[in-house]
Length: 347
Image 1 (cartoon, rainbow, N blue to C red):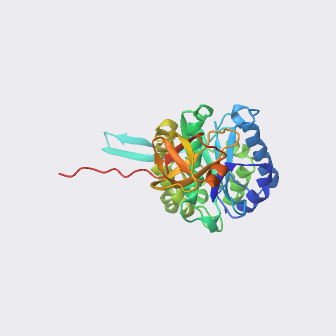
Image 2: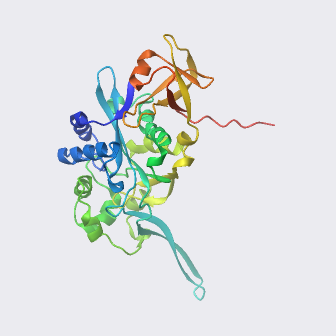
């Protein structure tokens, strides 16, 4: 059985093992023991109500309950950019025109931006390649949205997610080679490592503040703007199915797209509902696949099930109820794991 739960200190070795598998460009889970330990402590302080707003965040792990193996991780940040500036590029347009010469040109342009300051963020989504099958990725990603639905008061109005941009196995990023290297004079992998371990001051010190014309970049760099790494395509599809969209912001290093949405507009938040637990030795299976989460903030648990949902009751086995840490009659929050297809009437 696959279960989502909050991170603990004992998960550090497992997260370090996962970090080895992420590759270049995945900055939010660096293979750096001290940095990871500090992040876990920051997450625990959030759950304990001891972290200031700019430090608040949540980290969840995906556990295979029979072996207790941690096979995935996903995170949330409550309000980004309140302690250190949050940078991205806004892809905009500058117009150069002359009536006398009958010239009118629209030039795609990159503007350095802090527009997402204060937003909540989805981050640190990684699933062990050996477990990228079935619905595990959906559980790992969408359980964060269900958590926000249950504890809405802890988050801001808007949510963003930075998608990993295009780079190869050796850490070569076309966008970085055409733009970032000219200002930072270091390899993409080194810049990636520095941001991953929290050393971000060089961004503010060296990043150009003036607009940059996209046409001045190399053709390979232009082609990867707002494109995601092949391994990130499934994660992007999951979030877009939930209502997140690319609105013209990209990462300043690899040009990966930033997806965004208002939290209350997300399908998982909008369509979720509370229901009562019914424990049965032989529960009937329904047609829908449900994402189910308990309402225990400090001991949050979530799983997916094809349990039958009738009359505001969802039927669970004793094992499922035990893993969710709920009892007969307790309330849980549920939502369809997948969006229901829209059926249009034909004439």
